[in-house]
Image 1 (cartoon, helix red, strand yellow):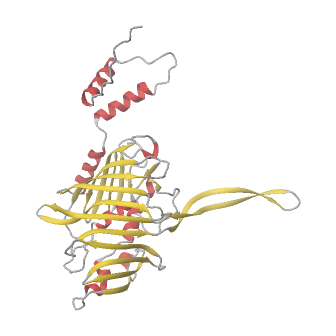
Image 2 (cartoon, rainbow, N blue to C red):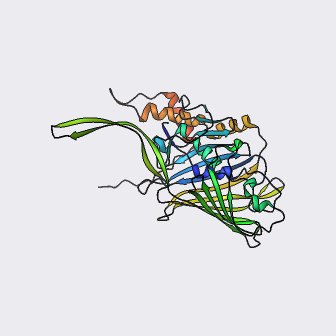
Image 3 (cartoon, rainbow, N blue to C red):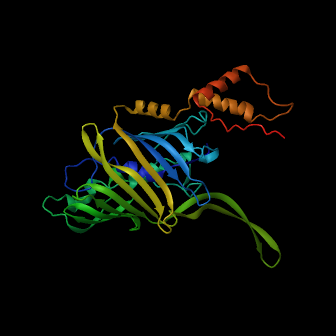
Length: 382
């Protein structure tokens, strides 16, 4: 479990689900609803020449924490594409990981929440070392827009129509924020477009909001994520041969980092919202996310979110539920032992002997997961 893929676009979406509630007329805003559980089917296209990876997961999200558990992935291969049977929980106190496929891995532990500037990562193109995945949290939180940021739109004496340029001051309790300015187009305090810029006035994202027929219910948003420079960790010594007229000499040059392009080609993220009943209230939640390259419209990520419901659990109960959902069943463990014992057997003095107990285990697995029978043919008489 040396590598993993973290769905940063979905973590950013989760950050958007936990905005503070407000009675302001400004739209769209978040709402406190408690702990929400939902299921997700995620698809990822890493490259033109790599098959689509489909991931089946369950999420628990509240204002104070989120957890996710992956139960299966297709293709169910080995290596970093093996994304099933992992559980993650994140709150203000840390970022916790457990993978049932490799229960003794040193990666299974609690990491401190990422603070400060993100260090150079060892891999690019959406691949992160497991210890670096937590930085997706900090990046999403650093880009979060709060109701208190919307100054002119909150003034009850103002109509809230026009174009607004809002400077975001630094504050001690939000020191890690990367937002420096907002550019907002609004009509009657309904936000139609928002540009989010960093401290260097570089565009982080541009979001267009689309509403239903009555104009007060968010139905869809589209966000442009431009290419951004990024440092990757090289940590290498390069030996160069230099000719100075008297012969060739070798010189060693230390390279700590290399320049990389994040979101190469740009990204267009589209989020579809629908009304969802949670308990005794109806809330508008994202139900489908699609991420494309901006330059060629190639689909890179999709997420279909379903089965929303309110649950009553504390943090420990959420973690236990996530581990149980992602955990290997006894049948999974039996199958892994049988595969290791027989299918990966390296013959030295012939095939391995069959343990009668293993035969019974195979029959139990076949009874639980029936093997389809192949076609039968009548023998041909010659």
